[in-house]
Length: 459
Figure 1 (cartoon, helix red, strand yellow):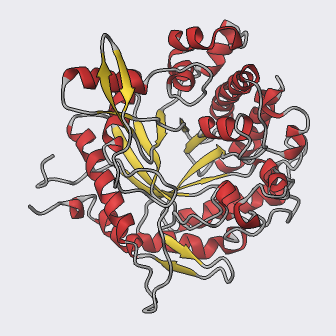
Figure 2: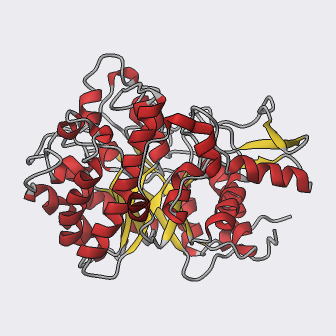
């Protein structure tokens, strides 16, 4: 890559991201209903150190100050999620007006600070009342989701244009419905996992239609799956082909892939390789359902944190390589593989030809307030610089990448890891709720202000 020009396109969107359950707290205030995460946190040994999102970062009461921090960061965009049970306590039925009032006030505060809202409608906090009626296994669940989306869009779309339907279906389905380590803690058989996945895809499609039907401003709609990125071990054509194949492959008895989710959304059909791999476990579906799932969207959000290398195997296969000893790792034990922010967008752009936004990228680090009052996090700066330079490489090659959202604005409740993993640009003392900008926050502010020019690496 040419280090003389590390700037990004003029309209490139820079932002930060959060999710409702991870930061809001106020888990039972002003009419909010319980989510599966509220319930899961009550179960013994479900969360590291017995933590919960009951208070989290107390963003519900402190959002004005947190929006001020976003403004101080110079971030022109903020991706956040809506808590479904805060808006509709039982998941369906009457709308909780104080819940919508809260998000209404948050949007107004963002716009007053010239920060563009990017709203995610589902980031894992499924209403407990609906889970007790079967959750994602219930064939009515897609309609439940659409019926929740309607009043949210009706209330906020006079000011909000950017919408993301569902975040990381691979994660909440695998970890919450197959492995049982996240809420709601299920270990479904594989056929049931695929059924829950199909209903999730239908919910996405019906959600898209609900947004377009209710939106007062022309909506800009996408969704945000995980990108499972495979990277060629060498520059050779065979390894390149192997990495592309591996990135878009489907393995038997595993929902951890890219194409089983994205092919129905963009092509209106499940990948043939997946149908063959999953066999009799694939749920029965109609062409009408595939029409619903493939309702046109405007962008593909990709959440990318790491990747793995693969090499070609005769005659036309691949193998995943082991991670070399001493490879840098974050405190979640994820290898630092910055090329993932090049190969992930590249392979997805080649397949789907849809504008891409990096909706999450970041790292958990060992952070604390130094004796001098500063939170020094040089690893986070280095991690982010490495990844952004790879993203700039995509743009040099005319891959249509239009934005980057750093995960996360705040240290937060990191699901089953509780408060043990710190992803934030802003340090949070969870005992006092004191916020301290980390050095990476000041660095990222310079990146945004220079539109990437400050990333230049001197020889």
